[in-house]
Image (cartoon, rainbow, N blue to C red; front, side, top):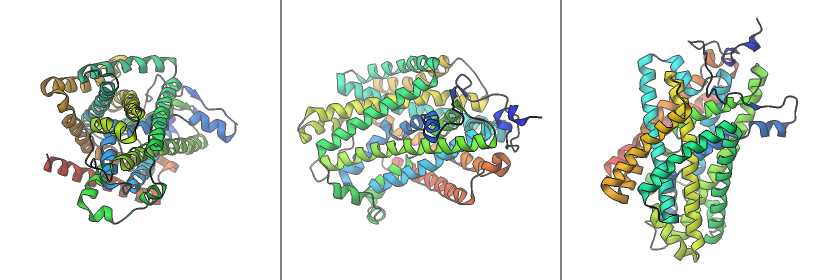
Length: 451
C-alpha cells in the first residue's frame, strides 16, 4: 500500500491508540499551498503566519500589569526575566508545532487519543474554563481601551467586543491568510506605538543593555522576586499550545517524512521569529514604564488606567497616552481573535463535537462577556481589576494540564517516531514544564495570600 496516500497521522507515527479520521480545523486544513522545489525564502513565506497568531497571546492585556509594575518599581532590572520567559515560550511552541505536524493531531486530539474518556472530559472542561478566562482578560482589556480613547462605558465596550466573532468568520471564509494578515497588521500597530513611546520616554541605552543581564538581586529582593515570578508565571498561555498544534496544519505540506521534517523546520523558524516580536513589545512596556515612572513619585503605578493618565503629563505630549490606548485596543482585539479559534479547536479535539463555527465562537465569547457584564453591573468599573486577577489565576491553574501532556507526547518515540524530541530537548522541556508549573502554583498562593 502507498502510505503517502493515508491520513497524515499514519506516516511514521504508529503509537497512537485510535486511527484519527478527522483533521483539525477542517474548514482551513491544508488550505495554504507550499510551493514545491522553490527556494528557502518562498517556502519561509508560505509557512509564515501561524507563529504570529500564537505570539499575540504573549502580549495580551493580561501581561501589561506585570510589565508596568516591573518597570516602574525596579527600572530595567527585570528585562532579563522577560528574555528568559520568552526563550521558554519559544521551546514549548516549537514542541506544539512538532506535535501537530509529525502526528497530524492537535494537542486536544492527542489527549483524546491517549487518555480515558473521564480524563479527556476533565481536561476539556479545564481548557474551556481557561479559554473563557483568557477571553475575559482580552474583552476587558479592549473595553478599557475603548473607554480611554472614546469615553465609552466599560459595559458597552465589553458588549461591542462580541462583534469580532463576525470579523473572524468573514475573514476565515475568505481564506485563513486574511486572518493571519489582520493579526500581523495589529501586531505592527502595537509595535509601532511602543517604538514611538520609547522614543518619547528617552530611556538610557546603557541601562537597557544591563537590564538584559540576569542579576542575583532578583532572587534576594522579595518584592522584585514576586514581580519576576508574575512575569514568568504568566509566560505560556495554555490555549496557545492547542492553537499552534492545529494551525500549523493549515499548510499543505507533503505528508512524507521529508515533507514533515521540512514543515517542522520552517514552522519552528516562523514561531521563533514571531515570538521575538512579543519579546520586543513586552520589553517595550517595561522600558517605557522604567523610563517614565521609575525614580519618580509614581513608582507604584501598575494600573492601566493610571498609566494612561500619567503618560501625557510626564512625557509632555497627549500622543503618549493615545498611543498607549491604541496599542491596548489592538492587543485585546488581537488576542480575542485567536481565542475564538482556540475554542473551536479544543471542543472538536477533546470531545469530537462539531458545531457551526459562528455558534461555537458566539458561545465562547458569551462565556467571557456574561461574567464581565454581571461584575460591572454589580460593582462598577472598579470590579474589572479583581476580575482580571481572577482570570490570570484560572489560567495558571490550567497551564500544567497543557504543558505536561505536550512534553510527554513529543518525548514518546512510539507516538512521534523519528520526530521524537532529542535527549537534550527532553531534559530542557521537562525542566521548563516543572519550573513553570511550580512558579504558577507559587504565584496563585501569593495572590490569595495578599488578597
